[in-house]
Image (cartoon, rainbow, N blue to C red):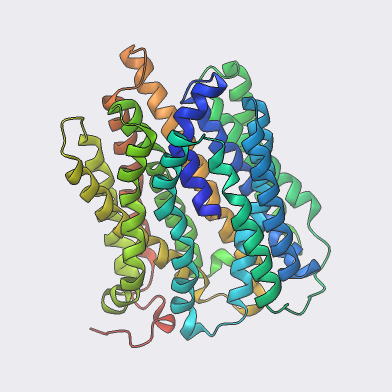
Length: 447
């Protein structure tokens, strides 16, 4: 449901902008506001799951996300949309990390890769279905329907969780690190506000720069506090685990670049090619189709080449494929564009499967709640940064060229920047030992 929502909203953005009387690039805040809220509340998810029970928190999160989807569909202006998306972010912040925690506490290390693959396969139905479903609903029903489709999915999810998932025993955690949570949340919110507004005319530049400085200061205070606190909101001691460290640091850089693609592709097809929402959705879904096709092959790839080689060389290949999208122009044959997006989806999916498995490969059981919160934040923050960076790159390119609206030349700047970030993450992964993740892949080929 969450993955479906993120892809259908990107496809529906131009239509939402026209209906609500906003600039399409400004409407990117409908995505980033959700991602910011998601990121701000994720650090609390591990403590909530331990304190109130993972199953109970998971069900409450699904209910919150579904209810917020209804409010999104009823929004009559940008402010209402942002408020509803923030509520959705609160639900999503508890939904994904806590759902992953329910799984991780029941699998052996040797089963981790298989379990992670099974966990992500159904989730990829969202991105596969999202672009064509979002385009169809936007063109033939309304952009509001892209939110209302979450209602039956959410109700079904609640029933299945209640019926199938056994409750985990509750843990009596120490009191939450309220000062740490406040500092981390404040830093993330201030920084994302600055990234979203700086140089875009939404607020005076002085306000945006002030929020950037405030966010940076709060981030420094948050890190200092968490390094000293007994039970910190973000457990930085996890970075002493080499596999966790590399997947967080290098993986974050990769995800920032990769997160620019789902925003840039449908927008470029509609604003640069003149395609309808339905047409752009049918083309955009090639990326998700490639990601879905890679999942069954990921175990074989990791068994043959190893986690380290995938982290290093796959990042380079995936980055170059995104940079190739900068060459897209209206004269290109649609099958060629579809093929480039599909192959790019294959390699990005392999990278995500690798990082999602490697992150927990060496984390001890008592640290799993802290690790899911930390890694969940590291997964979601790049999504918000990527969309904000893509929108900022577009607007900067339009302004420098003194064009009245974005053209394919401006989207090329965004694709080049996204691909470059992904490519850079490859050398950053060379710190991994050659046998990284060996214990989670049965039958790893040596040599």
